[in-house]
Image (cartoon, rainbow, N blue to C red):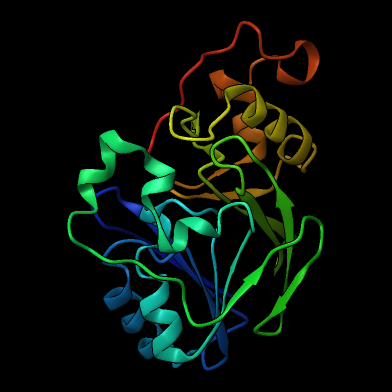
Length: 238
């Protein structure tokens, strides 16, 4: 399997390209600001045929180039319905104070949008991605999961968007964010995963569920005693 990624745009948002191997169909995850040129290079280098864009949530640092790539390759974008309005109106997700970063840029939905359903898998590019609704950072944040076969055995991989980072969690001070809801989502949807689950986040380095369970201060005692005494502000991105 081929999984490659790179940080793009002013927020260093991780965009990923996933395929069963070189020369096959591929999906693009979170093509944010200025991601399109690098995506095209990866597709060309590995002779990949893009068939879909998957969006972990609707913040524009993850969706900026979605319409451009979807329409160029005549492919759909998948997004949770609660975040779909941000595709055409990204200001809804960042608030007035940050809307200046949009400037005069006009946004629109891709020609084809498919709404994600919690716990309903997405079968694309010969691959099956699990979908877990994990609100808190945004109302429609989701986690995409896939099992990767390696010589050492099957390794679960989670594309966590801005829900969980190495050593931190997503911010919740933007419109419709909720710190408690985010912690509940992490407890319900991420912490039950095996320790060897590789976490590919929306920003920063890759990590694992085991590493975050053991070292992330935002998760300390989360499953045992709730979140009353945990840190209150995550970091990274929008």
